[in-house]
Image (tube, rainbow, N blue to C red):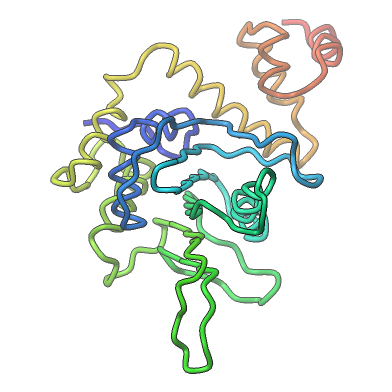
Length: 270
């Protein structure tokens, strides 16, 4: 078995937009049965709320059970505030057409982190937790939770393996981690039907040529992001030019202006 890496957006979406995998994953992580009519990618609400253009990697809505589930795959440590905003957006958007303040659907936001956490700039703390769960339910002075809202924001990070992590989390955390760090010899629980189905979808021999091509573009996009932070995106453009790629594809991957790419090409004849 050779798994495709789940830190690649193409493979992540291939696995988790599968209806069987999605339902099994939500059941294990959240503990509820969902039956979404559709499972969408790159979901946006329109018109947008505020100045942030929210885009959800995977979004599903169970209208019968009034549940929204959203999954974000991130290849790096990110500002926790951003994902709190994603979570709150999925809650407040329901108010757009509501006649009162009632929020009809419970929102579960699941954030999959594929890189170790960085130092928290607000608290100065370094987190090493596989699973973090935030609930909006209030507690009284005795510490008793009152299940009023029930929305949950869940962070999963397989880089911190804990001995006491329950099997329902462990199976999926291992799948994510092994696909990245040991794809050719993954140690995963194929006895879990959802994990087994996901592993079959991620099997390299089961990928299409188009999926492989898009996955390579995704890798180049991530490389471009890193280079852009150092103002070196043109280096990737040079590599792609040397490989004989067209300007429009180079522009798509690097997000550089085509005129600039053309200038780089002219100044660096092969």
